[in-house]
Image 1: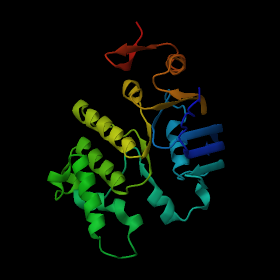
Image 2 (image 1 turned 60 degrees about the horizontal axis):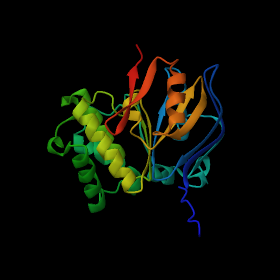
Image 3 (image 1 turned 135 degrees about the vertical axis):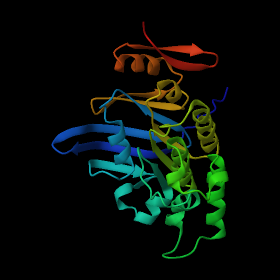
Length: 262
């Protein structure tokens, strides 16, 4: 009987011997990480584990020791425009000028694709409309950002990240200020992006929602303690351990959820 080889996803992002400091404090040390392409990977861990710092290193936003590789090429050697086209970033508490309209904020995501001082092209306008519709922000595209609630602003900033149409999307706490229905919409959107071949990496505090990803990276004290599939028993055990067994991972319908342990 002929064995069929198992398909292995190529690596979208690699991190080798990564170390990082914030001031005099070593925040990351000895990080080795491979993020598979065309998958959604969630990064979780206790407060102060280094999750956001790691994501910023992967985005090229923080100085660090070691090497980050994006789609097979060293990130540090990529021209800025190429990096910005291939990798999109949504950070915590992202700031944007309050006098800009929703449409203009989303159009900022197209800057890596535009020539200097060139007006938006039809492709740019189509990408922005698609992104705003995907985040249900199209109907208030003419409103200033200052007129929006926290959750509405977050959806616009997500649209800006989507408008880049990058192969890899990095998101730090993307569910901040989103109510449960819009969190569910975000989950659906992530699955659509992955189905379209995109790679998503998100730092999440909502463990039950993080378990909806394909892969999970678990961190503690600046190091990775586990990486594996979100439905794997070993991942569930590692999650319970990193939170000092104060949570339990249990099945609910066809999903896994994190419950406080009584």
